[in-house]
Amino acid sequence: EVRLVESGGGLVQPGGSLRLSCAASGFRFSSYDMSWVRQAPGKGVEWVSGIVSGDGSTFYKESVRGRFTISRDNVKNTLYLQMNSLKTEDTAVYYCNRGLVIDSSEWGQGTQVTVSS
Image (cartoon, rainbow, N blue to C red; front, side, top):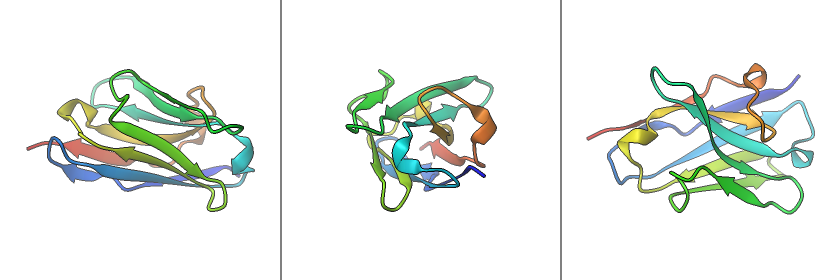
């Protein structure tokens, strides 16, 4: 059974930082591309960042490029998202997603990120 458990969210002021983690189990983590997606209140799901399984190439939504960094630890089966210079528009529930295509059927509970002064 695929299990994705997100953590690390919280309340932070604009300009602050957070590091999200996603503990993965039930599949061969190192063989899969992985992504972070988010859903803001009253809005649809949007893809934020992805990392491929092979060479570790990374991809970002334009609005987070230069502020967010995705990474993975294939020994710990964990996906990370370092978020710096956070903005109010980054407020959302963040989900770990297996693959580069959004698939909500495997999401965990998500982790809430709130950016507010």
